[in-house]
Image 1 (cartoon, rainbow, N blue to C red):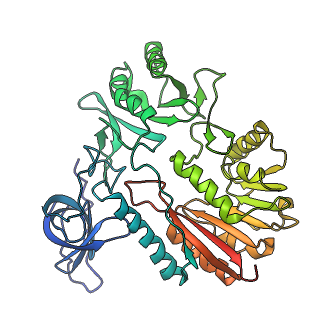
Image 2: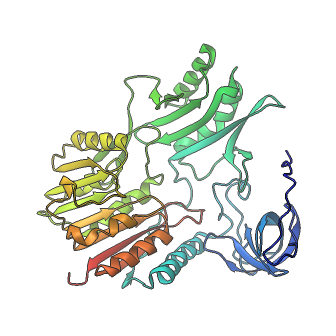
Image 3: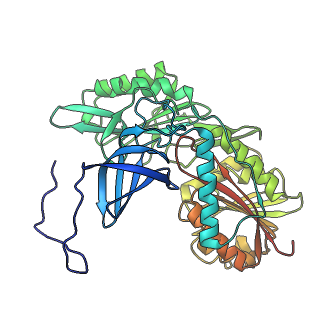
Length: 452
């Protein structure tokens, strides 16, 4: 649908009317290099173009997605001269689906791009490089993703439910077909799911579907209104055929179809089981998660008599393995439901030296009872906006060692500058390839007191 005109006209500060670039306009470009997000960078007529799907050294025809001032967002329409690095994507809808953006780039070059992104952010924002670069933590390129959200939308005109993944730079839905980044346990469910949902009498009432593979397969169906009994039974039969546990979500929290059902996953190599419910945060790449836990414990080097702090603990992904190594772990989380499950996970795994507390980690830590007595070491795994308020208080906790797990190199670099200002050194850093085939960068950094 065309966007309704407001009748307003805009011009730049100098008073001259800017020459706009309409969405859909095509442009021939030479691609100079890759941006940190994996898009190719080219230049034309005084503008910088960021082109999804392009590689350095290529000649491409790009289509405009959006333009603002001197910056243009675009995507490859045709590759006129390909880079020798370009490969055929494993997925038939790569380039259209918004999930994977780098399937056309070999994995070794994907890792190099992520390493470069981390190094550039640390240097530009914090003015620092680690004393030692760690080798990237890597796993399977495909078949790694154990959780997926399936988008659905009711097409009013065609009276048909669209099922798939969100398209790149669009709210359009790309049909699923096959998704090679999903773990094998979910691929068959995802492939059969569109036919199920489109067969429902009240398909328009389906909101979205989430899939998860852990100790059991889980299918969560979000509905905007109650489904008729025949539709409910049809979904139940589908889940039984695919050996999947069924959960429903209406206005409230997700609930299992079978009230006695429970879901969870194992921490491979640690002899630990974590309970989980749809909606809870969980690392989607199980092999990299296990490798990440091993590396974090190795870098933090917890000792048997130490007291260790785990901030942003979630379900206890780091806290439970730490509790096996030290005298006491204090784990802190802001979300009440996650605190409850982390406590239950500690109890279920027989760990009585793990204290789980709820706290707003944007507020001062010192007044909290759990913060008294100090800590020998700290581990934190914050969300994308980082942990600036926490790291500003780090020296007061007395920690000599700190492992920071990050899903955003920019906020890691910002927080690193703060830690360095408090007398910590950046001893070691490296990337974690949690999301192969994408430009998303996860990283781990070890900080130590200069006197340690």
